[in-house]
Structures are given as structure tokens and as C-alpha cells.
Length: 368
Image (cartoon, rainbow, N blue to C red):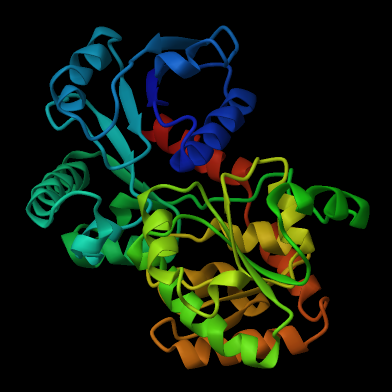
């Protein structure tokens, strides 16, 4: 069988999912032929066994070229099956495919503050995303997703059979483990971080509720004035807007906007923090919870969408719409010993495996 996998997002947030699945399939399958489609910038940096062929597809996602040119690149490879690991499907591609839908954020979040463009442009763009999503759901042979929460959301929203949707969860990389005190003390000055601190890593899109976390942090500081809040994430439009809007607040001097964090430093920043906080209103998985658990860090997060499924009994939960509840839960977690839920956190990590998920996906390829 000749299977194509769209790897154009190899070095994005979604790329972590693509990299882990592809690298596991390399270990699991020496029989099928694979065709991997890459952007030019990634093409020469990756190497695979003989049954894996690389093809240049230097077309950015959510573009006109993705819809008009990319289908022909796929068709030239005479694939038996194509895996699109995101909902950005070229809707004109006529052959068999499976799609991974990580969440339905585009349907659940509708606000002009979620776009860097004007509101009309945002709504037109959102309409295009919705069209691609509907085509992906209805034309795919199977739908892959990462939590039971998202599976249920897809089934209810699109009225498709539950049998059409397979859950193959994310997992945490083996690179995440508890850092030594020496590593922590050596790395924190690189990001101008002083202990003790709370840690958040991710983007600042409106549904991530970072603004709500800042409001809650103002309350927390009344009880714990020694704390700093570290906001880890590349400074794109949303973080820059956040800085501008909060620059005159009393809490601003206690904030550290790190900009991009090197992958090798991320486990160290988790390890050095008092807590990891995820205030998001909508998450399809919430991989940072497992990363924090792996580093022996307590997790405080929203009690909505997929987060309780992933965090289980190892996290502290709050209502993301109630900043007072968020603050109270953070204070409660701060007052408990660091290792209060350590064993529970490591148990959650062990419940997820990239190898197991890749095997599920490989079985699905072969079945189709």
C-alpha cells in the first residue's frame, strides 16, 4: 500500500503530533510505502528508511495554493490513502483520505479579537475554515482525533457515526523529566525568570483566557506577593496586544513575557515553577498538562472541555469564567506540598503513549 502523510506542518505546534506519529510508524512498519510531503525549509533536515519517500510541497496551509495546486501534487504520487493531520484539507482532492481533527475551536470560538485582521475578513476566513472542516468530516474514510471529548463533539456536531471517529491520543515526549537544581539555576537567567514563579506556556489567543489568568493573578499576589508569572510563548500579535493592554496595571511588573522558549529549556522551566496554570476555555487535548506532570510540577487548570479527561485526579480544577475561583484554586495548590499529587501525575503520563497511538493509526491505514 502507498500511503501519503502531509508533513508541511512539521515544525509547528501541530507538527509535534506529525513528528511523533511519523517517527513511530518508521519503527512499526517496514512493509507499506510512504510518501511524506514537506515544505522546502524542512526537506533536507529529515531522513527516513527506504520505504519512505520525501516530496517537496512548498505550499503554506490555509492558502489558495493549498486548494488549487496541492491536490495535483498529491495525485502525482498515486496514493492508495492520504493522511491529512489537520483539518486543512484540499477539498478538491478526489481520492481516499483520513483526517485528524484535533478540536473544533474554529466552530466554538467566534470573536473578532481572535484575528489580526478586520472583523469582516475574519468572518470570511472563518467561513472558509468551516467549509474545509465540513468537507473533511463528510468525505474522509475515517476521522482521527485525540480525546473522547473531541470525538463526542464531532459526533454531536456533524451527526456522524461514532464508529467513523477513532481516538488516538497525544502523549508526552521522553524529553520531559524533572530537571536538576543546577539546570534550573543555570537556565532561568536566560529568560529573566526569578523564583518563585507560576508558569504558563502557549499562545495568547482569546480562548486561551490569558487575560482571565492575569486578573486572577492580581488576587493571588495579595496572598503571595513574592510570585512572578512567567508567560511562555512567541511574541506574536496577541502577546504584544496583551502587553500593551496591561502595561499600566499594578501586576505588570510581576509578569515575564519570555518570547520563544527553546525546546530543550522547556522541561527546566516547568521544573523550576511552583505551578503550571492552564486557564483555557477550550482545549482539544492540553498536552502541557502531561509535560508538567512529567517534570513533577503541580497543575492547576480549567474544569472544561478535554482538560479533566487528560488531567484526571492529578490536577487542581477551577471554572475558567470565574477569576476568583481560579485565584482560590491557585492559592490552594500553592499551599500544598510540591509532591502532593506527584504519583498521580506520573500515572497520568503513563496512561498515554505515542507508540500505542501510532499503532492504532497504522492499523487504521491497513484496514482502509
